Figure 1 (cartoon, rainbow, N blue to C red):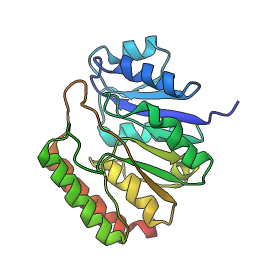
Figure 2 (tube, helix red, strand yellow):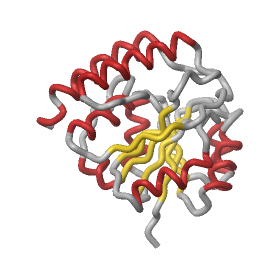
Figure 3 (spheres, rainbow, N blue to C red):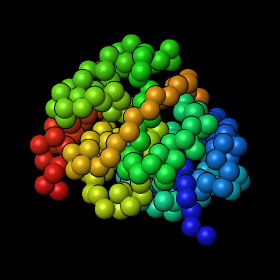
Length: 225
């Protein structure tokens, strides 16, 4: 039987959150494949394996981009829902996002966290996200609100047909803007964003620099690739 939905995640030391996240996915999207690309040195892979998750170990860690590319490309579903494995994203929206792809013909659905400032997001993060989204909106002549959301729905066929630069941080920017530059159908919905379980490993300065580079690359070069 063909798999309709794959929920793809990457993880690094999420032993405090992984069981709850998997439980929430199973409750709200029964029958979905759960794929986890894991680079942890804690008990995350043991917990995930015990829960029957399709586990891919990428250790030693190779970074966010290579892990996310595997999570997308090795998914079996017709639609791939990405989530962070830290409890921040609402699993009860999985079926809704998948429906926009499977039933309404969208290639990509961006679950934006930024209809307004989330209470759980520090002001410096919010202002940086808002500023980069404003720049992208001007360059792409379309309102874009969240370049870094970890929750999206991708048509798997689109992923298979598209090349992304997985090296470096800020890959979600390219995963959103490159399909847009190539004329893919994009829908934006707004979601709640909860407080993460565990510590963040994000390097904010590197992320900001790579975000700018990817915005400019997608605007001026993506159509040629």
